[in-house]
Length: 330
Image (cartoon, rainbow, N blue to C red; front, side, top):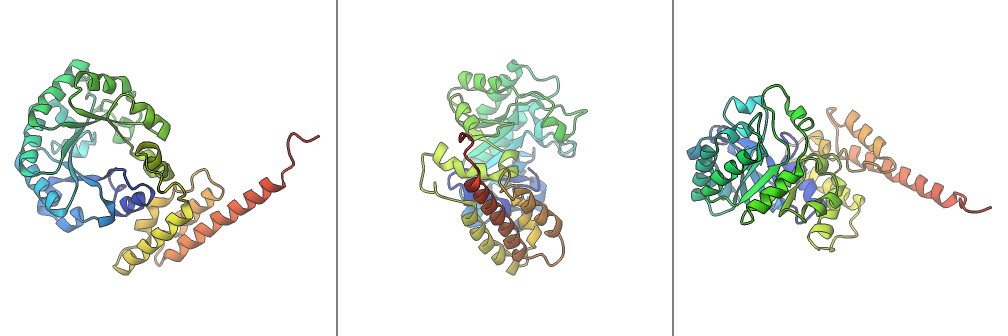
C-alpha cells in the first residue's frame, strides 16, 4: 500500500468508518531514524485508531522506531514480514524475513520491550519453496515466543524470485483454509486474515473462522464499502444515514485547510477517485478529477464541479426511473 494509505487517505477513510483500524504505509526504520521524522510519523488526530507499519530487521532500530511511534501517539506498531518487493528484500525487509523466524522473534521482542502499545506482525503463509503448513507453524511457533499475540496473515505465499509485487498479489493462489487451520492450531493467538477480500459479506464469513479481517486494495479502489463496516461488523448504526455528499462536504473542509497549509489538491483528491464507483456519474467524476486534478492551480472548486456532475447524473437516473413504464403493465 505504498503511496496509498497516506494521512490524506486515512482521513478520508475515517470519514467512512469510525471503528476500522487504519494502517500507514510501510515505513522503513532507516527513513525514520535518518530522515525527516515528522514527514514519516505525523498523522491527523482524527485518524485514531491508527497503526504504523514498520519495515526493518535490526532489533535495536525497530525498538527505537517503536518508541518514537508510541511518543507520536500511534495506537499500534506492526512489523511487515509480507512485502515481496525486491527493493526491500535487498535490505532484509518484508517477506524474505519469513526464512528467518528467530530474527523476526528477536525484532518483535525488542519492540515489545520498548513500548506499552500493541505490537503485531503481518506475514504470508509461506515464501518460495518454504510453503508447507508445517513450516508456517514453525514460523508462528517461533515468533510467538517473542510475546507477540497478533498475527495478520496474507493468505497467499510470496514468490520472491521471478514475480513482481503486483504478480505476487494475483498469481499465487489464495488459501484461506490455511489461515483458518492456523487459528484452530493456535487458538490462544489473535489471527487476522488478509488477501483478496472484497465485500462486507466476505468479511463476515471469514470472521466465523478467525479473529479479524484486513482489507487493502478494495478499501482503496472502492472506498464506499467502508461506510458499511461500523454497522455490519461493529454493531454501530449511528451513521447508517451517511451519504457520499456528506462525506464530500467534510473532505472539502479538510482539503481547504490542508491547501492553506501548503498541500496540493491532487495529493488529496487522487485518493477518492473510486468513491462513486458503480454509481451514475461515477465515471465522469473520476475522469474529470484524473484529467484536471494533477494540473497546476487545481483547487477544491474542481472537486465541487465533479460532485455536481454526479448529482446531475443521479437526478437524471431518478427521473428516468420515475418515468419508466411498469414492465408488468399490458
